[in-house]
Image (cartoon, rainbow, N blue to C red; front, side, top):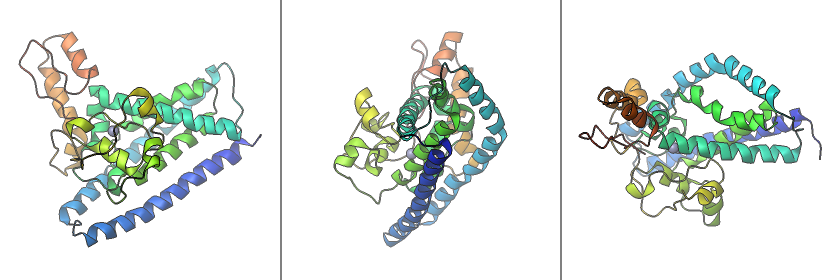
Length: 294
Ligand SMILES: [Zn+2]
Ligand SMILES: [Zn+2]
């Protein structure tokens, strides 16, 4: 079934737009839900504002870097040994591969302290879990994230199709950030759902490093990182941020990493602190501050 690239991309971007409208509606319904339960206090409002505020530097970084990433993607496309024609079926395959690439981007963002500290910990730093949390992202993601999808372009998929698939899987994740929707039966076993993503945002020991998938939970089941929701999670970082200051929101974990690097006794220790898991400390010395996880 041949279809023009434009038609398929328009369809995917259009579906992403629909998801965005759905997310906006959900945000309003959730606000009402929280208000009726008297959980919409000043702290929650300020926390939501803090989360939305992270979009400002993020969009600025995106605009700044757009031309460089377009050049990088076109460069890798030219290196691909063949070009895969865009049809409905190859578009579906591209979405699945981008979803898989996201799993690894997300998993490495949790398991390599440098990525965790400078970028992804920001998304996990709120003690609340609601629709606004979905928008709480680090501007550093704009520097790091596109690297993970270059392999899909190297396989011969059109860069614009890869971008459309990425927008789709990002848009999908907005509705996951809510306590309003409970467990959803078999859907929880196959797809990422609010229940699965609550586990991902839990700072509880049993919930750390679980449920990395964007759309499909199949990757977590395949690679052994799936965990179903049992007890209600405690959200946020294992060492709480306790601040709404934008600078602290963005550099809380990076500051701890810098402090530990200064105390490193050798290049090996410094490399360990940068590239091993958050929480790793060199053996021979008194432990520096363990990094937060979430
Ligand atoms: Zn995460
Ligand atoms: Zn999230």
